[in-house]
Amino acid sequence: MQVFVEPGMQKMKVVVIGSGIAGLSASAYLAKAGMEVTVLEKNDQAGGRARKYEYQGFTFDMGPSWYWMPEIFEQFYNDFAHTASDFYTLKRLDPSYRIFDKSGEAVDVPAHMDALEKLFEHYEPGSSAGLRKFLAEAQFKYDTGMRHLVHKPGLNLTEFLDARLLKGLLHLDVFTSMKKHIRRFVRHPFLIELLEFPVLFLGATPANTPALYSLMNYADLSLGTWYPMGGMFNIIHAFVQIAEEQGVKIRLNTEVKRIETRHGKVYRVHLENGETLEADYVVGAADYHHIDQHLLDEKDRAYSPRYWESRKMAPSCLLYYVGVNKPLQNLQHHNLFFDADFNRHAADIYSNPQWPSHPLFYASLPGKTDPSVMPQGCENLFLLMPVAPGLPDSESMRERYFDMLLQRLEQRTGQAIAPHILFKRSYAMNDFTRDYNAFKGNAYGLANTLRQTALFKPRMKSKKINNLYYTGQLTVPGPGVPPAIISGKVVARLICQNSTH
Image (cartoon, rainbow, N blue to C red; front, side, top):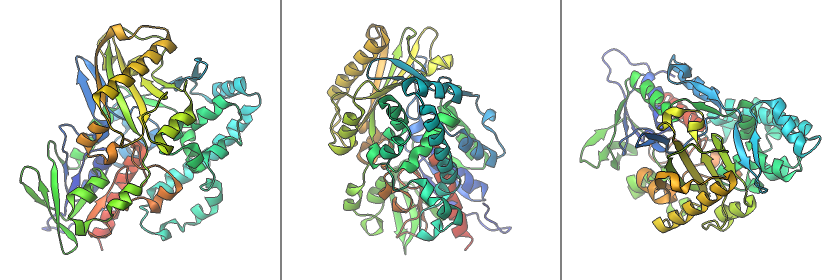
């Protein structure tokens, strides 16, 4: 990926709107290719949803807390003559996470395959053979998907006329649902829920999610769950350092007001402070819907309001950052509270959007692995409850659910927590909208349904503006930190190819 600049020629200027993972990835690759890149970030930190919150000696990762697919990170670092160990120590978690099931039992999901097979055998004799076959198929999908599919920009059908992809198409299970696929291998309800867990954040029920996404199970159960010591924000430190090493300029507290076009091309980017920037290319790494519907004039918009309203969204979430003045017992680094009805909560998100009556939720205690994120003798508690995007969001609703989740947390772990809380901060749809201009206050982008995969996602290259491109969770390949890294690289390659024509 290189743009050749003749001596004396002025470098092409690129403006990247948004400094999330995809924006930082794209900016680093574009600058390495020889372009002059400026990243504009409306908030006071880089990182987008992967920002951090610090208070009274506690450090919270505000968004992503799961480190999966470590080879995707490593490939990015290698592309810039680095390795992950240049920036942080990576530790594999064992157990990977703990699940509280409907009986209230706490079940640890082990990191190593022999122990995982024993766990499956405990619930369903003979199921370890099904697990091995399930993961072998999932590995094929992972290898095919992560090496080939996710690197396609999704601009036309010919991209997918690849002999390797066509040969393996029938084995990718794109027309089979996860619900049906999983039940080919296991029958016990707990094992089914364990294998359906990664689907919860993909944006559809297992019945409506293509079995292609069992590749997530391979990432989970085979490649493992990891943690960068110091917190997930260390990833942002690393990406910012790499981008700046390439010459990228990152401007914080700088919000874009309007994108002005002339003759089918971006002419100038107008900032809220009255400044204007000229650019040969613009990369929209902020919320796609916000850029398309609010920063562009109506004639330049690629999609209609009706199109956006018809999109199926992945969940938003209600988050809590809680400082506790004592260590908490009977919890691991990652904890999934599946002690409620999975299908009922999924229906409250996808089928009949409403605030859930008895939700599943997730609790993270990174201090179990990394004491540096909190004062000595304390606990750093992060709670997450998936909810439908676009719901009314109020302080009273947040308080109600905090009390509900805390009560269940205390009951399931057999300890008092409420009297030991030093502080709490909530974060939900109104905050996602304010901080990220997130469409409907979404947290995870578009649902990964068959009709919203690859070619059917919002286009990476604008249909109307020749030098306007998009990257991040609302375009290909989709939501999640590793896909965002890849999305940035793919859009950078597209721009470099276009600039040499």
